[in-house]
Length: 65
Image 1 (cartoon, rainbow, N blue to C red):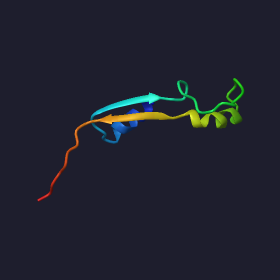
Image 2 (cartoon, rainbow, N blue to C red):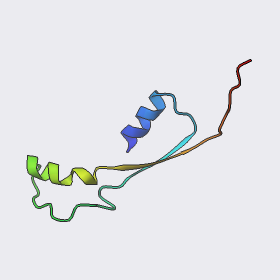
Image 3 (cartoon, helix red, strand yellow):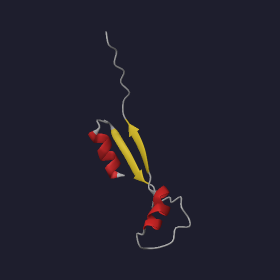
Image 4 (tube, helix red, strand yellow):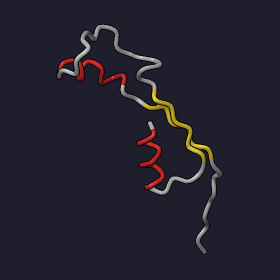
């Protein structure tokens, strides 16, 4: 989640960025078995790797004359 926020900042996103990694706290997957990082376990857990992002700022409109 922190990496996503850093990327947005590097791309010029201003304002408050509220981020939350959701994988461990709110998993989607249910039948992924194993403790070692095998290719099949990584693939099974992939849907859990997600981030919620909320951006807070001020909308500014630019008018060109």
